[in-house]
Image (tube, rainbow, N blue to C red; front, side):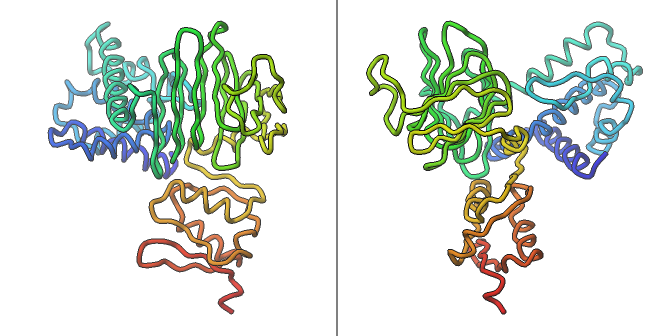
Length: 361
């Protein structure tokens, strides 16, 4: 087991114990929801521990974190696994838990109980997250570093990246989502009678049943297809409602798996892309290939309260390639220093200031 997985297991165990504490405050709930939303692995590990805790509760009345972690790390739990929806990773299955905890004998009642526990956890998580949303108004927003996933009424699922705003407008005739700004992944439930549309001021993205990512920040809009087909139509800066019926849009493209469309100045340009890289934000990873440092820094600032600041324009235009943890701006600054691109200093307000390395010579 990797150090990263060890850390996730420890964190999940701590959250499980804290969640059972009657003093679990609203601030704790917000922190818990944020931790869960940070990675699919967090949710998977927490549900695994909940299931294990449910099975051992009659054997170990007052189990502690160390006992729980030891069980979670047992290799024997890998004998049988089931995949969580929307994830390529796995968690211990019910049969594996039952076969490895033979000292507990509750017969056929154990499986419903375990799924009931898991369902309870998911409901609790949803309640915690929805306190920071406004689903009644169809408006969903995230702040610095916040990522959330939530179902829509048609069964589609939205994953919303940090500092994003989304408005949902569903009725009997249409499924329409407005990405006001930010980035989101859409896992669309099939409904041929009601195509699913994601609208921005630059383009309309339409699908029946598929999975795709839309990024819209400032003048930059990209659409990446993970599964199925989507149609991208530019609106050339004009909202779709203002177009006359049957009028031709300036540019459009039909995208398949592994393709990305960039919408600029009314034109839709299609590229082949690495889907894993394009959607790495869901794992809080930032992947860049020859991107200006200014854009890289802007991405880091989506996830961190304390900003990174570039001190001179020449440095801002320098190209950067690499993969970085979205929450680890210190390591990023150290990387720039080690490759000789920039020096850095920490200000009293917590900001990291980058300056050209040669400026210190």
